[in-house]
Image 1 (cartoon, rainbow, N blue to C red):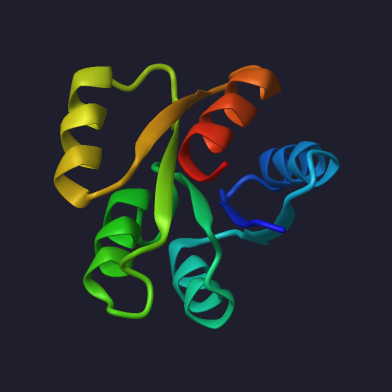
Image 2: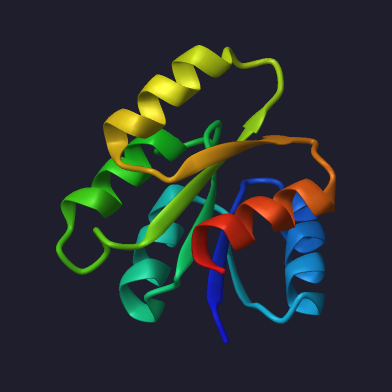
Length: 122
């Protein structure tokens, strides 16, 4: 079973995504911050991280950068979760620069999210 780490500072969003992905036969872990995501990633080695960009403390971009620079976590696929009001061109440039696999807007339909997850890790 593929393992996914959902990282968002909003508990409602974490739980909503976790519920849907669990029903779709993924093992789902959650983290409320970038620091927690890094620690869980090192311990659990998920196949994919769904990573919110705008979080207090270290944001999603910095979290991604730290994960990609660490030999233990550099190969984990990352999809950014982003609010629709952010400029897509800037997000695309950043995720490519950081080595992430893409991004998905939130709110988005679960079908769209699941399609992107399957595209990245099957």
